[in-house]
Structures are given as C-alpha cells and as structure tokens.
Image 1 (cartoon, rainbow, N blue to C red):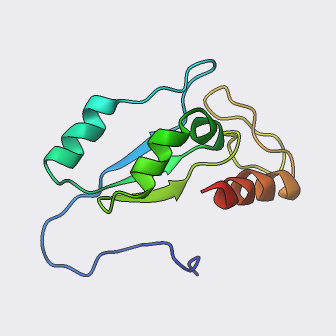
Image 2: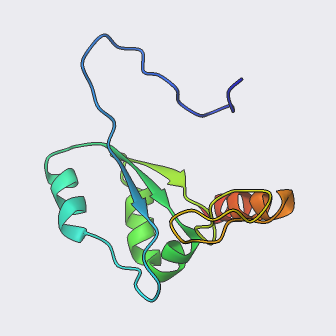
Length: 114
C-alpha cells in the first residue's frame, strides 16, 4: 500500500536518475549551496528538494524562488528534522519523535508551511 501522491516509479524505459537534496541546516547554520542550485538551473536539471521547517523559516526569499521554479519538486523534510519514531529512538545523534502525535506534528506542520 502506498501513500497517495508518493512516486514509487517512473513510466519510462530510459535510464534515468532522480536527484534529491535535503535542506535542513545544522545547529546554528541554515545556509545552502547556492552554487549547486545555480548550476541545476543553468543546466536545466530537475531535482527534488526536501525542505525542513527551520530551514524554511531562515530562508524565506530563497524558498519562494525554489518553490516557483518548475525544475524543482518540493518535498517535506519535517518541522524539527526529528527522525520519526513512536518511542524517541534517535538516528544520527538526533532524538526522534516520542509518539504518534509528535510524528504527526513533525510531518503535518511542515506540510502546511510548504
């Protein structure tokens, strides 16, 4: 069973790759690789950009440009960048969500922001 709207395959016989990039920042730093984004635009290369809520808040003018560029598909990378769990399990030294409500908030609140 798949979630509606989630792509699991492409209808093509061509050899293709999907480029995906996470925009989530680090503690105290929410920059991004403008040179990479400019290259993708210059070369007309599509990509999916997964945006985190904190990164969105720190980069509103850039977010508006990315969302309005047809080369980029925007994905949800969570509100707080917490690994989704129902028991607080961490990943990469990041504490996870502790219950279903926190999982919902992590995903839904950022979805509304996007």
